Length: 355
Image (cartoon, helix red, strand yellow):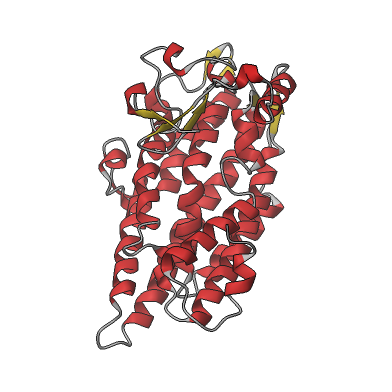
């Protein structure tokens, strides 16, 4: 395994193979605690946690601003990329590929080109993702607060303000759109899942705020769409890493990516602080820790199963307590109508992972 690859390679004046550069980005995501198994917000959102209505509103306001700035700053970065490419008589093929992928992905945030989103999103300008969120998820939260005469005050969190500022900076850099898309598409699925776990149980006057799947259409559609998007940004034909075409640009790409990852981590830590834990939380985390470090023979026959669509892992030793599946539940004992926690496919789309 490569050790400290980022520090070593970026000091050398040669081009990294693009698959290795993409590996460097994955390393930064892991070191920066921005993966499913390292990010505190993602872990705690899944781990028998809950959120109050007032804190949900706080999170919603901040998420609306993040999605808005992400949309327009990526479009701005695409403009910078386009201006740079216009200087070439024949722009490099790899840059054309990155440009196509970038426009295709951000078009979903603006116009919902992808059918999974288009089928459920509002038509016209209201379908822009920050507007769609504001008019559905956030509006329902506000209505619930008004029903209970809840007095609430929302504001932008300091870490979120810093993240928005870095997004603005990246909009002025020709590498900025690729950096944002590569990082955000790596975490967007986990963010959507975390929102679904936290918001779907919310009640007011003993009634669910979000009563049907349609009420959570923004979140559910994003869970499905992000599985496909994630494949595009890591596509080694013309993934986002191909935006850097010189050794210096590769070094800059990694440096700015690291800075952007840190900003996201801090912002998500602020989201984590809005979560409270129910009475089973400590027991769940204790069980999880024991199972992850298990040495006893009784655990030897437990298996892990991988979703063929989105790579979600079901670990029999840990189970999915937040879905009512206890630790130690064999995969074959899960009800046949159970669906993948991330992308919604059936059990038949899972395969065992070899030890």
